[in-house]
Every structure is written in structure tokens, then in C-alpha cells.
Amino acid sequence: MPDTNKLTLGKLYKYFIIALTGKDTDFTSGSIRKAIFMLSIPMVLEMLMESIFALVDIAYVSRVSVNAVATIGLTESVITLIYALAIGLSMAATAIVARRVGEKNLQGARESAVQVIILGITVAIITGIFGAMYSKEILGLMGGSSQLIQEGHGYTQLMIGGNITILLLFLINAIFRGAGDASVAMWILVLSNGLNIILDPIFIFGWGPIPEYGVMGAAIATNIGREPQYCFN
Image (cartoon, rainbow, N blue to C red; front, side):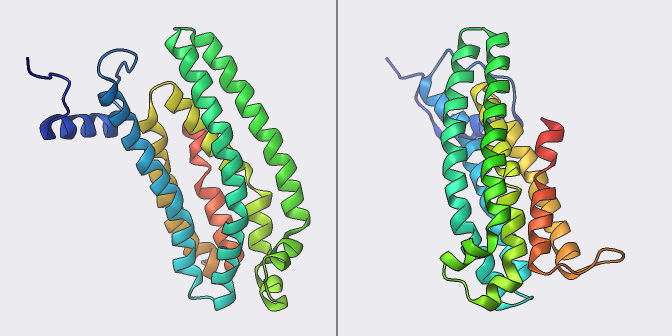
């Protein structure tokens, strides 16, 4: 008896396209291997899109100064702690929403999503205040020189102070994953990265009425670039 659930190359390609297009699929029935594969594709691409934010920032600010590049590296090291919080909360959000959706309790899924977002906003406000107030001290603890701190503390202040964009991005994406629609989050991140690529040189080097912000402009562009996540979701 042939294994009809075996993922052949042809099936993998078909499921890959369906996963990217976000075609409505019921993951509560059928092959578990198929469900795992189709849900993992947008998640992997989503994380890839998230890493591109920092890479684009570094690529542009490398034309500003060495300290600017070092500032992004040091700040990203600290933001990793925020990523840890965001990933932990998002895993819980995905599990709770997925359970409610599996139970066909859509109202319960909505209520769970709202509660998770409120919790995320609360955490973001607490960490954001801390980051905005102590950006210079954070860079100092990370080993930054006085010149680096003077030049780059604005970037750190905006990135940690505006960490609500990171937390909400992870949580909203997690809610969609729990509902079985991971492709929405992936495509919004594609748009967000496109905006970041366009806005980075405008805010870093200045353009028209927009002044030259240097490395701080990268933080402004990144936070603005993440905004479509909430508008479309």
C-alpha cells in the first residue's frame, strides 16, 4: 500500500506555493507533515525578513562612521533581550489562539488575542521607558566609548524606547499563525522591509525638507517601516 501522505518533490513545491499565497487551508485535519511544512515556510521567511532590518541599517550607516556601525551592533545585542520576551509571549499567543480556533471558538480566540496585545503593550511601555531614560548607560555597559555614546545614543534611545513596534510585530504575527494564516505576517514584513530600505537613506543622509539624522535616522526609518504591520492587520 503506497504512502499517500508522503511529501514528494512535486507536493512540496505545490504546498510551498500555497503557503506563500496564503490560500485558506484547514490544518486541523489531514497530514501533520503537510501542516508543519506549510506553516513553517512563512515563519522561516518571516524571521529572515526581521533580520534584514538590522542588515539594511548597517549597510547604510557604514557610510556615516565606524561608531555608527558599532552602535547598531551594540544596540542589537541589547534588543536581543527584547526579542526573547517577544518570542516567549508570541509562543504563548500562538498556542492559546490555535487552541481556541481548533475548538471553533472564534470569540474566545479574539478575546485571547486582545489580552495578549494588552500584555505586550504593557511590557513594551515598561522596557521602553527604561531604554529611553538610560540609553547612554546601556551603551556604556556594553563597552561603548564616550565618542560612540555621544554619537549613537539617539539610535539606542529610539530603538529600545520604541520597542513596542517589535513586540506588537511578534505578537500580531503569532496571532495570525495561531489562526493558521502565517502568510499574512510574512507579506507585511516584506512591505515593511521595502519601506525601511527606502526610508533609511532619506533619514540617515537627509533629503529635501528632512534633515540629516545620521545613525539615529536608521532607528526612525526602522520604526516607521514596522508601522504597516498594525495598519494592515
